[in-house]
Length: 394
Image 1 (tube, helix red, strand yellow):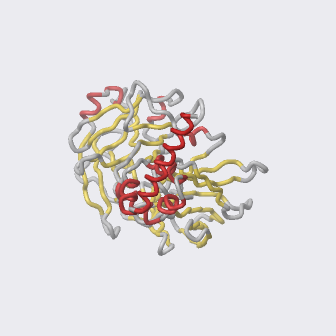
Image 2 (cartoon, helix red, strand yellow; image 1 turned 135 degrees about the horizontal axis):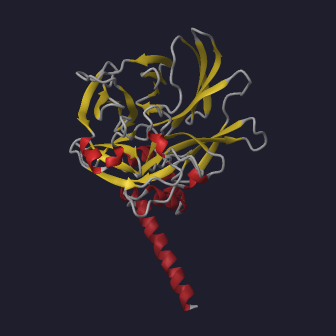
Image 3 (tube, rainbow, N blue to C red; image 1 turned 45 degrees about the vertical axis):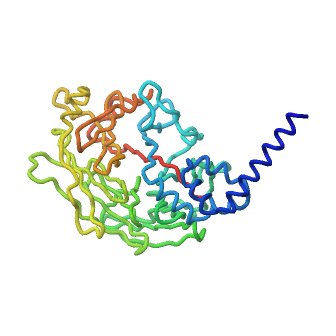
């Protein structure tokens, strides 16, 4: 009985404290903005007032701005067997005990279509008909998942790309981009792009006749547009969501470089689109470019080579005149404003390399199933996604 009374009194004190916080709304919001996202989702059950505050799109955007540098790690592919294909790289773990993979990686028959700023888009064969595919958008932080009704499937349509557009610094809502091919000839390609808006929960469509090849798949979202790189053609195209058009993007070249260069990486970091040109397989030099806001050109962000990294990890070096053994997986900012980090997959592990001060650290070893042949120069199916937490509702 005495224990029951103490529990009841403790619960009443908690309720009075919660009520007092509600009365001081500014203080409550400030406290919530400082909490980890997973804890904030748990506090939704405290009261209707708390639920209303946390679900407010303005609060979602303010939380993202307050925690804009909360990068947890990366999702990388490359594991052939055993399944799953993807694995997690933590920036906060250690090499002796790698962090656990997120739960969504182990969803049966999952195909990760895209991960953007904390939201995940994946597909699975339909439960009732394996000839159809179901598409989902998920917030791994909250566990919320929503099945999206997409375009009608027919035999003469081919899915080219399924991508996710989400920028929590600007809006709590997301867009799903669904690209299908309707027809193809020697000189033209007719595609249909469907755009789903989570704000209106509706689709809009557009037809596009293309006279050039676009490397659809694994799109990069940055400032209201999707960017795709065509690895064989060494080109980049983009789709502007507002204007609803597809165009080729002028790409920069490395100057005074005797070797053939190629696009080693294209991605977004800190609200900017970055492109990395490399001189593989014959050189370890690289140049990091940053696109101008109006897409009129590129600025050189950094130039260098991986000489110091090869010295630390000799297995990256060339053997029998073969290519240098590494894959550029991601580019991200550090805690300091001047930091510029490159994530590389090399034989035996994944490393973080600071392109500004030439320092590096090994993040973890490769999981079982990542084969050595993965590091071929002509391997262009490498995928990586930045992992952050978001309060966005699905």
